[in-house]
Amino acid sequence: RHAEGVESRPYYLARVDLDAPGNWVVEVSAAGRSGGGAFSVIDPASTKDPLPGQKMIAVATPTTADHRGVEPICTRTPPCPFHGVSLDAALAAGKPAAVLFATPALCQSRVCGPVLDVLMSQAPTVGDRVTFIHVEVYRSLNVDPGDAGALTDAIRAYSLTFEPVLFLAGADGVVRERLDGPYDAAECREALSRLVA
Image 1 (tube, rainbow, N blue to C red):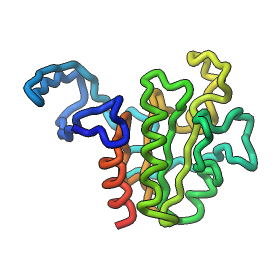
Image 2: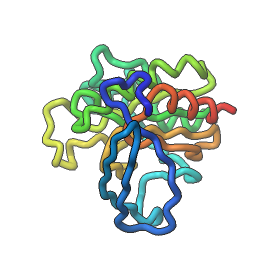
Image 3: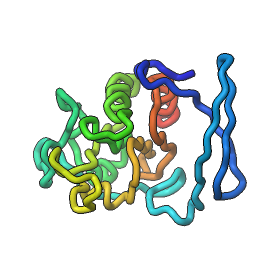
Image 4: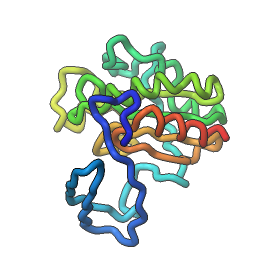
């Protein structure tokens, strides 16, 4: 059970290797309770967003110095500190990067705010060895989520259809890991540790 820093959204982490894309069913038993659900796995070749082992997409993202038409650049209250450098500049700098695509104020799953807070709490564990970037999903708070024009340039470049997604990229710009959906402080801390190892 993972809940450190996301007590209101705890989850159980399971890593499995599936041998083929398609529709799958999972059954889970934990702490004396059982449950299950269905999910789809797509062919990795059919997705445009970077997977582990692939290069990050160098795209300009809003910063405190240049909002690039996104207002606000951070929907967290108060804003997070991860808007000091654009993603393209961070990748060009040749330093590991942790890049979170999330919209705390408009997140349908209500996971974006808690995972951004977790990332903020864990950033000091690696200090300045990693560049942290938060990328909002929408151009403004007054949007129709179904309108593709409401999406930021970075979300369109990454072809993301859900959030939050945390990309952890090495100094060479290659994705080492992705944390899709919820993660807690323990999972984040371990992933950041592997990134700088």
